[in-house]
Image (cartoon, rainbow, N blue to C red; front, side, top):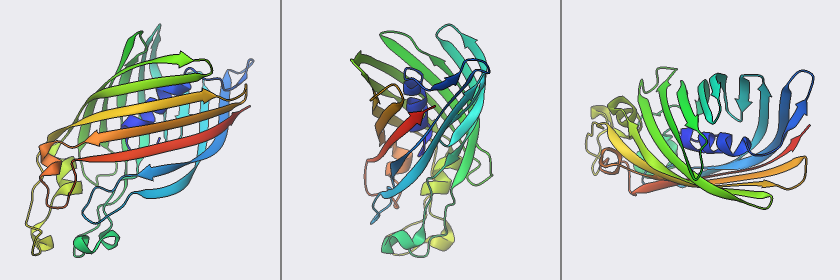
Length: 249
């Protein structure tokens, strides 16, 4: 859901194990609820953004909507699923969010589209995904691999995931580069190269009752050198947190 592809992917994986409303005649599954997002802003002098979110999950045959992404399953075979989808991208740069960023041009939020292959195996499953900017903001791409393991603890499913994520030079330069007209004392020009990040996340999916489901995900995005060496960044990682409570019909 909601900050980047990894939290969305993990929520999607967890939701497969939980119950949701289902009309046996038409195959429709759906749930609604609400939650909040802590969105990382890794720039100097900034703090994470916290904001409430509505949550809508729908599935009809091979079509699905999960939070801020929607798509179609082109492969459904045993433990393998292959999907194409589009999703919102909330990360951006707001010059007024920190005195250090004054004089920077905004880096706008966007939408990504792509595909993924998921293997829900035990004891370890995996997810391979590729996304690209759909609105021409960064004109960049990401390629990710996430290994996932976990275990049910009564009504609670706990998942741990880890894996590398490649970001293209266009993606890195748009969000973390410094253009010539943005140079200031202490903020030299910087052209961001492609880089590899490392994602580590923890997901909890709790089936509170037959109808109510609590979901929470914490993700650590460890920055590769292409991001950590940017003069805009003053930390080695960013943390995001997503939690929601939904009701299934």
